[in-house]
Length: 450
Image 1: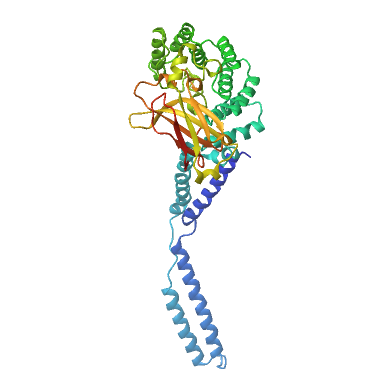
Image 2 (image 1 turned 180 degrees about the vertical axis):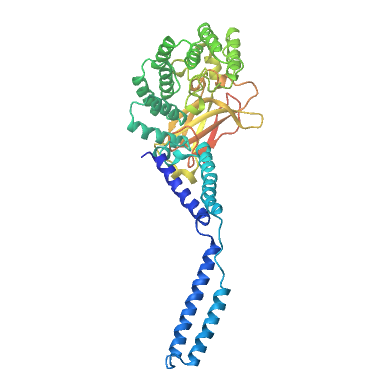
């Protein structure tokens, strides 16, 4: 029997029992008649008992004695009086008696039919179903989503959507290696899917230090051969060409991207600005990396550099274009990272150390994407560092392109989880605000992330 049908049957049984309890007074004998009948029966019982007592008391008298006849006459008179005073059973009109079952049936219908009708319209009879109880709920966090996806894939290893979602979730957690493996599995299941191919390229680029050179750009070009209007592939291919200083090729790609994006979207406005810079013969002077949900299924929530973002390290080996080498050197930051002694016992030699340069807004708070990122190990501390354009995550956001007058800060964080996002228990410190090109910086890791 279907679980929903079983629930309805149980509800109907409860309704019948409740209805019977409520309607029983209409179906039983009138209470007044019963009370009168009980009173008459009690009177007769009392009279019978008195007669037995009287007969016992008069047993020694002769049957024809005057005393016996007088006592019996007195008892008879009393009995007549008491029986005359007893309430008589009221009579009920036959039509009233016949009307009672119909009244009960009408009340039952009024109670049951609207209740079940409303429940079927707005209730949830399927809630009793085991499938309903086992329905997936929304994960409370990205970590929980990853656990759920891996459990699901253990049961269904050929679930393409789950592999794709797992890859994006791992990218969002900063785990490029795990994301690469997930997208590799997804591509083996759907080799002709352009989006899977470009997502795989993105993960590969992130795993090799945000560099598109080599296998990533080859995958992106293959994705464009399958779908020439794939927004994420167009964005990343354009970024790669900018990194190579091939502005005409980048203009062709980003013009096509501009045709794909919604005309009134923020991404379209940013890409139009990039194109204006390129057509003027200069790299896009933008200190913020565009990102968003447009057509790539990536973006911050899905784990990737924004599907329409000219990002992910376009130049070979992460090096800046030759024409910008002097600017890169002039804007480089250098210094030393130390760990405060009082928290030195918290350092794990195998932990990942992120050294990040970020611009500051007018209120002195870090804003926009990193303009340089360096990775090291906990065992490398204390660490002498140099940050330049070769460590930029995007040709759009580099130290040499920071607007004049804008200050930057160097943040060092020891991540026990290896993730780019700060977690409770990580160790962190920051330099004083400086301008690009500063040397001799000291970054003291002296705080524990709460």
